[in-house]
Every structure is written in C-alpha cells, then in structure tokens.
View (cartoon, rainbow, N blue to C red):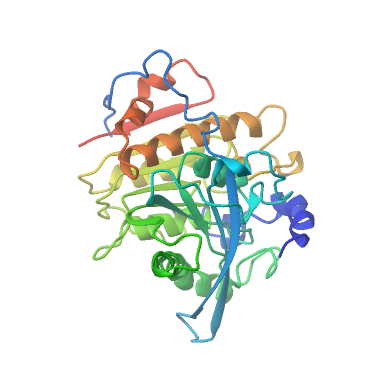
Length: 353
C-alpha cells in the first residue's frame, strides 16, 4: 500500500467520481451563536498538534458473501511534540507510527468513508487537519470499491454489494479500534473515547454517512458530515429521522451530485437536532479530494481553488466536530451563518429546532 500510493494519488481525480460511477445522482435559517470573537482561533488554520499516521489491518466477513474483507485501515492522530520536526510520509502527510500525544486522553474519534473508486487517503488535507485538533481519524477501505478494484467502478452488482458492506466496514473498524483501548501493547491503549465519535465521508462515503446518521438503535455517532453525498443513490428516504447534528456540504458546480438534492433532502428531514448546509457556489465534486484536474470540468480557473475549498471544508468540519463531538463550545460561533457573511465562496444555512 505504501508507495504505490504516490502513483495512485496522481490518478485520484479520475477515481473518485462516485455518482458517475454509482449512476445514482442525476428550512428556516436561524442564528446559532454569537459571531466569532476578535482574536478567536480560526478552525480553518492548522491545529496545535503534529500529526502521526498508522496502518492497522482488520478483517471481517462480508455482509453479503461471508468471504473475508481485509480492511487496511489508516489512522491519523495527534502526535507527541517529538514528531514535530520528523519527516512526513509523502502520500499520507503524517509521521508514520509517531508517538501518540499524552494530552487530553482519551481522544475523540472521527470516521471517514472514501468515495467510490477512491482511496482511504484521498482527502489527507482533511484527515490530517482534524488530527491536528486532537481527533483520531479512522479511515477503513471498502474492498471491491477502491481504486485498486475498479477504475472506474461501473458494475452494478459490485456497487450494490458495496452499498450493503460499506456501513459495516465503518462500524467494524470503529469497534476494532476501540478494542485497542484494552491492549497494553497498542499505542492507543486507554487513548480512545468511544463515547465521543463523529462520522464523515465523501460522495458514496457521504451516502454511507447519511445511512449511519439516520440509523436507529445503538448509533455511536454524535454528529455527521456528508461531503457531496449521493443523496439519490439509496440514501435514507425523504422524511427520515436524524437525531444527531448533521452537516451536508455541496458545490454549486457539482454536476455529479447536485447541491439541490442536498437542499431537498435536508428540508425533508424529521429532526430534533441541528442541521447545516454549507454550499460552495463555485465548487465541484472533487473539491473534497486532495487533487483535482481541469479536464473534469469542475476545477478550472472559474471554480473555487482546492486551497480555498480545503480551508473552508476544514473550518466548518472542525467547528462541527469540536462543538458536538469534543464538546468544546468555543467553536460554536463558527456554526453561525453570520460568521461567513460576505464571503462569496460560501453560503451557509443553519436550522436549529
């Protein structure tokens, strides 16, 4: 997995078109909190921790066939200060197997589900950013639906199989990681907080996020972020109940998963929890991945730059998860629509019951 990673990363923009692959995509606003105080730390800027990264292998039986599914899971985490000047992995952008920080244990967790035909490390700008703010970010692969399996992923039977297996890939990887709390040989011994967990994903992974956010009974997640989700691809039906804070991000120039689908989906929810819509008017479907190329039509000179998109994605993702997963109210001000007023690259809507 290691340095074939560099070659695959260069192909990434061609690999994460989940709805072209999936063939599925064709509220009152209210003030949440006061605007950010002067001098407040911008959660779009890097956090205080250096970032470590580890690869941990889990295995589970397929939900559909019973055959083994090997989950080569990537984990980004806040590292000890000794990792600050160490060399980062070229593809994963963290220090491999760096010592874990000893601060503020146990640490909150964010899960990440990649796009169809994508990679666990497709969005390192995001996974490393959350780790720099003290989260452990866990990204399992979805075997049969990765860049190594299909390029592009067009087979309907394989996509249906992925649809049924992906949610359990996520929950199994989470449960397996939490078992390391009891393993004295693991760097994560007594370090993971299973009561503070968030869910996130891009495209097909955004669909998985919506599935898990709306699941009832034993849902371990406190908040969820769906990036350009495949709302038309088997998402929970309109009118579904989502009992946790939910944020959906979409792009005005996304021709794969149109943002209007996100608006309609959010408007239909039966929810007693806050939900948010973050729209990048000049954003396309690949604004959420590390790389984008102009030939795909949604990242040319008239579109939002990857740098600006990533800064905004990180800002609102961090604010969401810090507020509702880490229980740090100092970030809630960034969930106020007024905080983004005047920026032409973002439209922010909040609905708070």
